[in-house]
Amino acid sequence: MPLRETAGQGRTFLALIYAGMAIALLYDLATPALNSRSFFAHLIADLLLCAAGAALCLAALHITGCGQLRLYMPLPLILGAAIYRLGLRALFSLPIKILRQNRSLPNRSE
Image (cartoon, rainbow, N blue to C red; front, side, top):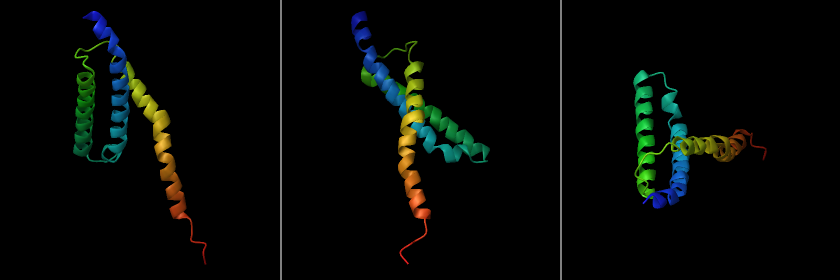
């Protein structure tokens, strides 16, 4: 039994990296609610983010069949969030910046 658990740790690590990336994406999507001045909107957004993060972590553990908490599990979540923040977020925001710049340019066909 211990060897089977050791062999599945790589899948669990990778699944938790994906969960960390998804949590960071959800955090970006919830930014307007987190920036609101309303205390209740901020509180509800924080609670929903915590619940979604916990659900994603539990889903990753259930899908990979790990079933037990390990000491290394916060590491892939942090790595996934860092990968999203440092790489994928910039990659996703580049087309949006280009579209905004093109939209704000005056029409030169006249």
